[in-house]
Image 1: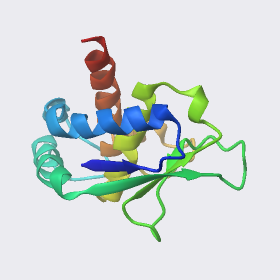
Image 2: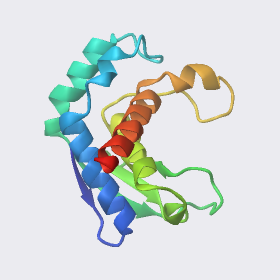
Image 3: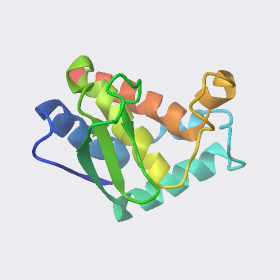
Image 4: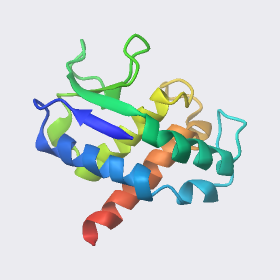
Length: 150
């Protein structure tokens, strides 16, 4: 997975995109160890193999996004009309760490690959937390924190 970051975005996003690319190259192994993901009938091994084999074929642009409602809780999003583009909420950039944005880049790129996690409403939160985008983003965040310490 290669992330091409709009130069107008903060250095935090630039660093996070670089780490997210590295995660897709070397940090995927824990994906296989998760017991079962929700919102898919794929096995963890199959999810791992799918992500591992497709990450080299994806190029994702990361661009700034000013949501209509400035106080939305959304950190980033993807739009069906713009495949392979992750939109980062510019109002939230300074409030998060590099590892948070690694997780965000991974989460949104998994949406680009077709993985879902159900609606963004507060209902049904438990199954959502075990979905591929949310669980793998957590694995990526933990990996980025460990990687940054070495």
